[in-house]
Amino acid sequence: MSDVLERVKKIVVENLDVDGDKVVESASFIDDLGADSLDLVELVMAFEEEFNIEIPDDVQESIRTVGDAVTHIKAHI
Amino acid sequence: MFDLTGRTALVTGASGGIGRAIAQALSEAGAKVALSGTRENVLEEVASTLKGESAIVPCNLSDEEAVTGLVSKTEEAIGPLDILVANAGITRDKLLMQMKDDDWNDVLSVNLGSYFRLTKSCVRGMMKRRHGRIIGITSIVGVTGNPGQTNYCASKAGMIGFTKSLAQEVASRGITANTIAPGFIASPMTDVLPDNQKEALLGQIPSGRLGEGADIAAAAVYLASNEAAYVTGQTLHVNGGMAMI
Image 1 (cartoon, rainbow over the protein chains, first blue to last red):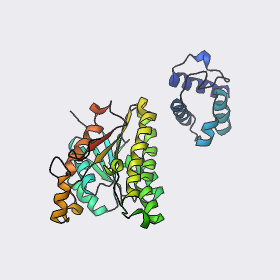
Image 2 (cartoon, rainbow over the protein chains, first blue to last red):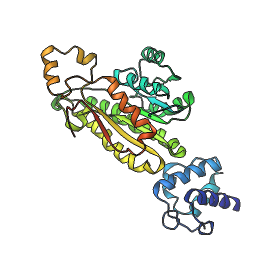
Image 3 (tube, rainbow over the protein chains, first blue to last red):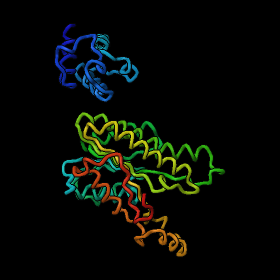
């Protein structure tokens, strides 16, 4: 399942235009990776597409770090 | 200038005077146009006057579920949506002291609630495509107020505030959101006014005439165009100089 992390990483790097080394599980999208709230919405949209899942609005709000995203995705694919 | 070839547009309230004119002008500029409204036979008649490709997507805007599904229905018919013109609206005019809860709720729900639902359901796709045009048809009275229309004016002022917020949220993604505020537009309602009232009305309009649907439609075509990419969060007043705000 480390594959999920790699795929998440790729999406984050593409969407936020950040260095791949910075995209670690503990990294906060907003505080560490420079995302704004609209970037977050777009990231979630990209995750939904990549993994063919639906991430409800209330869950979206709890996804703060790369690890949060990976955990949620793993639980739903 | 103002070429909309290859663009798609949804116009609500397309069976009314202003909506029909907007649909015709967008079509004339090259857009594929989906016409929404409640009177299907009138929509069909409007569609028959369009030279380009069009579709009919009937919808009752007081039906919340139907409104939420309207954009996907439109996209099935004409493809990913580039331009939303939220034009439909109703009035339930009464003095505040006589206004029932239903008069208030119906007007707010159809005029403002449906604007929220429609924009929400098209903005996601527009964000992905990095392009979109949201155009809300508000009214001069949303800015000036008008006795007997607390509900209507609140809904129209609400559209303006809503649009300004949305414009700020999505500007970085190539989406603009603006409103057009018509003044007095000639309609079956103004046609039947007695002469003295008509004269009093015209006395307030420096241009000396009522507006036409085409006056509003031209503003819509402009706001929908690539040329208006740097215009967002604005209210474009089209009123013959009746109020200069």
